Length: 201
Figure (tube, rainbow, N blue to C red):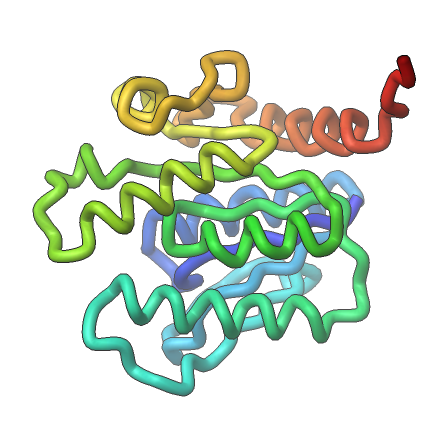
């Protein structure tokens, strides 16, 4: 299995980065391959050398995190298109990688798993672009084949603020036992569902 993970950043000590790192190293242990695409901020990271980390530069500076994230997503999509590998599943993290994840999933016809670590509603909805960020979260929830959240509060927000179907949403707390095994199982299930023949009526 080949997994493409999208993250806004990848550096030691940052929450989402550590989440992606742990998943990636577990996948390598189980004989799978992982590529991580993120912003190249020059910061240090440590990870199993078999994990293919590609950090991309952002050629323009956005005047806010929303505009900057849109520029980053263009670079993530460009880098993914240049890779020779054909991935089996795409795993995006939070709204900052939703545009890239959705586009790549549709372009390559591969399943999309989205982890929402927190929603804009949880963060207070007090930024200039909060409404647009929330719309991106909604779009990601709508287009993703599976939604993972890391706690019950985020699940409630995803269900009630973003209208995610309950059957598509799962809590996987990275501080619990076997959480990485459960993510691997989600990858496997998504791939099976994508390959399953469509019943003709």
